[in-house]
Image (cartoon, rainbow, N blue to C red; front, side):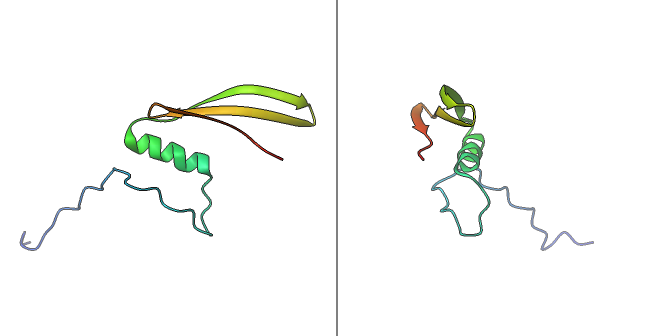
Length: 78
């Protein structure tokens, strides 16, 4: 076989320049997208449950996430 014309496969670019917008058919949650970005960038997110309250049949949780030195806190709103 001749080695002419053979090109080695390109190494994929692991940098994430801009987040991809969620498409209508996308099944990824915002948490999955954030985690994947953290893994690719080498700084996985750290999720912490700050507070749990409410009745057993309708609990409410407050979580924080830290990634890349940025900390954000959020709660689900009804």
